[in-house]
Every structure is written in structure tokens, then in C-alpha cells.
Length: 134
Image (cartoon, rainbow, N blue to C red; front, side, top):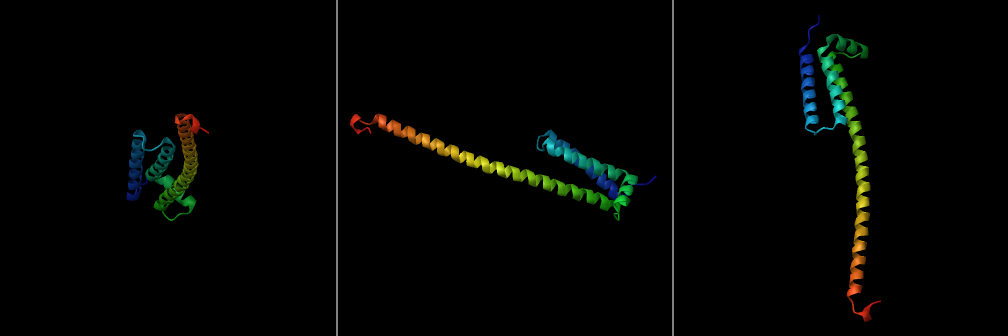
């Protein structure tokens, strides 16, 4: 039986605490289910790697890394890069949607002002004496 190192225990406990925090954020609707699934998967993988010394050792050897903590760090770094890419894609899409909505709002305001001007012009002609009408 292999004992857990201090690093593994801290990593696993940190992953469990992060999982509880993510679930609380979802419960309070501060994090959407779309992103919560990714966070739950990450914390589950880190917790399993933290508590399972043989699995972590095998994975470290398979990937050719120097230490078990490097393996956990590499998974965390890969997840961070994936999340940054996902959020960049989402932010780009939202920026494009915002630009399209801004253009549509400007056109609607222009049309509304045109209708107001037309209505004011019609009201002005209706109130003018008969000789002044065009």
C-alpha cells in the first residue's frame, strides 16, 4: 500500500473544496450548467489523481513526466488553456451579436424618428388654415 504525499492530499482536498464551491455557484445560479460540467469534470479528475497514488504514478510514467505533482499541474494547465479558448470563442460571438444588435437598434431609432417627424408634419398640416396647406 502506498501512502499519499502531502502534495496529493492538499491537491485532492483542494479539488473537493472547488467541487463544492462550483456546485454552490450553480445552485445560486451564478454559474451556468454549461460551464459547471467542465469544472465538475476537472475537479473529479484532480481529486481521483490526488487520492489514487498508483493511477497517478502510472500516468506520470506513461506521459514521461518527472514527478506526480507535475502531472497534476500539467492537467490543470491544459484545462486552463482549454477554458481560455472556450471563453474567447464565447466572447467573440457575444461581441458580434452586440455589434449586430447595436446596428439594429440604430435603424429602429432612425425609423422611429422618421415616423415622429412624419406625424408631426401631418399634425402641422391638419392644424394650418386651408389657404396654407400644400
